[in-house]
Length: 91
Image (cartoon, rainbow, N blue to C red):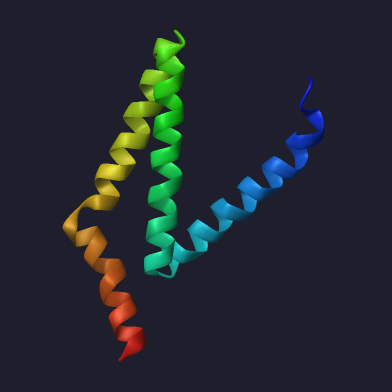
């Protein structure tokens, strides 16, 4: 494993980002929504890369799941939940 020294810090950073997105989403903050969207878009793109290198089943399932989550988060009623929360806090 040539990159083993980077794995621990990399996963720690990933854990911090995902916990931050979870906290932001549970508190219905706009930044949490954006962070969650970024995480799932990047995840979907990496799964698309899996398809391109020949891992069709793993990549296809990943693209489908990430795509479904992005579509759900993009729905107007879900998006409105985050923007209304921020408006209430600023009022």
